[in-house]
Length: 189
Image (cartoon, one colour):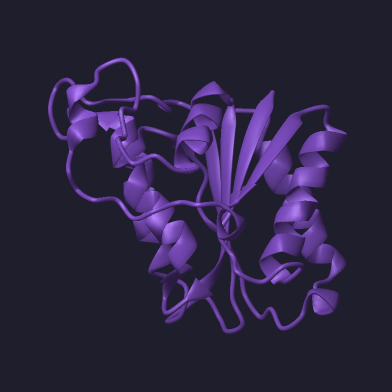
């Protein structure tokens, strides 16, 4: 299987990148191909809400020329998608939120009988690391991701919130084991 990972954290080698790396390593150990896109190192502009993409039926059709085009192509060609972000103000970090906004071009006919998606049915997951607890802190991420998954018609696992993160060196073997479990669940639909 081929997986695309999309990293939305601004901190290299931080908690989120460490946990995502463990999940990627576990996918590779199972024989899967993994391609990562680091949003903070790419040029991904804001969605302009022009809806020109809706004029195209066979391709995403986004008219904004930037690195998001390559990510969309990789997502469409993949079997699964893993997104990862640290928690920022009860949601995902800005780079990943900007990317989520741009994915409007991957869906046609939302809320109608013709609702379809270029990434429909693909396995997906969201990893979110945070310093504090999940409850009252990271719990808003779950309904956001679930709604996005319904919009894009993905086969989504519940978001994996990794609470109590301070520094990558403090992440324990239990977190690494959960990353391997996530990889196994993604690769066996």
